[in-house]
Image 1: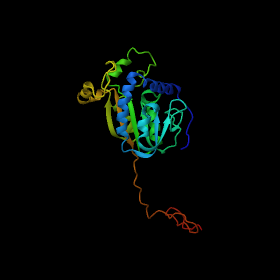
Image 2: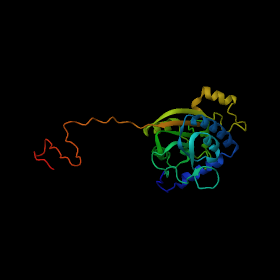
Image 3: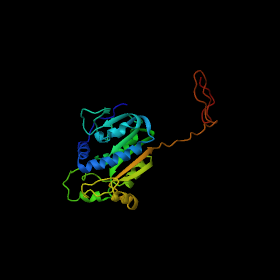
Length: 260
């Protein structure tokens, strides 16, 4: 794999770093637990040599390490020492990865805090091999979580994120040539519901059944499709191709002379 660029996007990179710190809060830990369980299911059936994870390295390290992809590459928002695996410090909008070189890409809330989420998806499409898998976690704009964005101070994570809908992201993926394989909605409890956050709670089970579109977090798994073109058979009336030591036959529009 060869580097493409060393440019960075400080604003997006800084916010992605802050979401990793937010995972350490009581609310963040509960969200991470549900996301990790969902990620384990979405990684099933994905094989290959390289998986790239953009952010959330410490949160999802064990789940990613347990996948059937041989090597995990971490793209943290800033360079730091420690941990296992290969690490690259770069902007998710300009991944220093060769095209068509990765078997899977994992974006945990990367689109929520990237400066240009569509550019991030474009980069993911570029670096994935045909039939490569893309897994996305994001905060749902159609959920009670969106209400807490009102009145919050600018830049406060996670409420300052883009908060997209899974429908918008699915549309972007379709335009890039991806097919959706899995869709999941998580975290049906409102973020102001107190200290008891349990994925098996009555509210969570009711949300999955009665209002599945209103989960606080969406999870998507998509596959990169590459259209195949059927080559046209060569016409027998066209001139023969040039071979070493052979003459070129005349065309109907040329002169009758042969060039040796």
